[in-house]
Length: 505
Ligand code: HEC
Image (cartoon, rainbow, N blue to C red; front, side):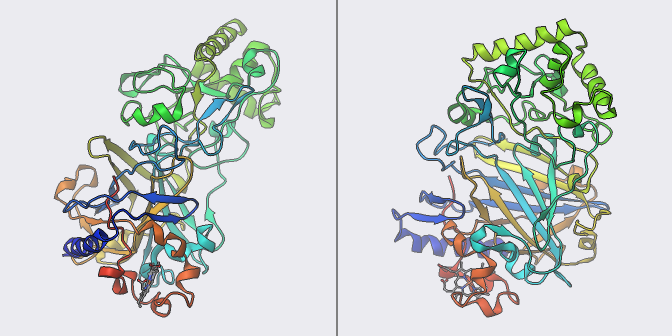
């Protein structure tokens, strides 16, 4: 029933849109953006969501079409479809490794979802969805009430390759994250962080890697990883294992997301996740062993008598198997020579993900990408109920509770951040629900093809500037007075549909 309705809406919008084919639908969230009109194939939708649960766990499975990367225009990746599993790469700018110039930066693909039980739920969320947290033209994201809204965020580079999604929450001022951090993740900085951290270039004198500002972490070339993958280079490589030197030209050709599932990970806490995802070398350690100096290290690692320093040193001694000055110098020279041989264009990733026990890291993920259909499939897994007061308790799915669900996809900007959002939907175990959560014996062995799906399209980009709590509640919106009592789709049907009629290609 539910998709028949959506599809028939789509056809009527298609008929209308025939009159407008050739016109440009332009809009802006953080940036302007243009959709190219394309015919709608019957039954084709932009995004599909399935939900299943067993006695203890729940799984959300998103399947969505990537769309052509649109920004910035005029670069080799503009207009190309590809799974973006890299983020914010660093390349040498003649002085040091730095981010690509603004306007040429490339963003990872992402999917995110917000959840809240409708009974005694957050005011307006079930009816208006994520619009209630968007203010001042989408620049500010927070609740107006004193609640906490659960928000899972899968990132194509910063958490997906590690098998996690970031589990955050929104309160009345911000997106809340924790400040924990355990060794070895603390080696990077003194505090804790989320599933990633940024890396900077080294600086100093005494070895060319310092003088030339190489990054602190490069890949551990030659290390054998799970699935018999041997790390082929100190720097990022394409599908043919050759060093990437032209990000916008070469990254779109990398369509395999299974080749090395841990490509972007520097540190992990092995007591938390025992699978080996440690694939880097810390050049800061090699410089210390080679030269005996610590000036290039972060402040908390400069005291050689400290526990932090000594834990860090033994950690990298075991990981790199390098403990003598001669061996460290040889390795540093080899890395420097490989960078030189790439014409000083080799790239590294800026995101060096890591994990440690925290309620931010309790959503696990699996991913795949079909290059023929240009579709991501990402499944997010979590306990129905966790101990965290930032996590929505989903255990009442089993007893028929209704949850409001809204989701969004970032898959559009090459150098900017523009996202597509869903309408608000309701999820329960009833087969009349927008999203029917299905009870199964074990979510690890679900036959997803046999489960019902919500199939839908994203809200039209042209409407994004108005998709804020501020505008929707303003006098400019005819639906303002009933915004939090009925869902958007109650009024927005047929020619008032908020959904995009154009399947992205
Ligand atoms: C009580 C009916 C009603 C409800 C509920 C309602 N709207 Fe509207 N909305 C309207 C009407 C009527 C218009 C003006 C006609 C139009 O532009 O489609 C409108 C206009 C809009 C527009 C501007 C459309 C444009 O082309 O500029 C947006 C965006 C919008 N609504 C979003 C929403 C969202 C999001 C929700 C749910 C959170 C919602 N509306 C709920 C009745 C409603």
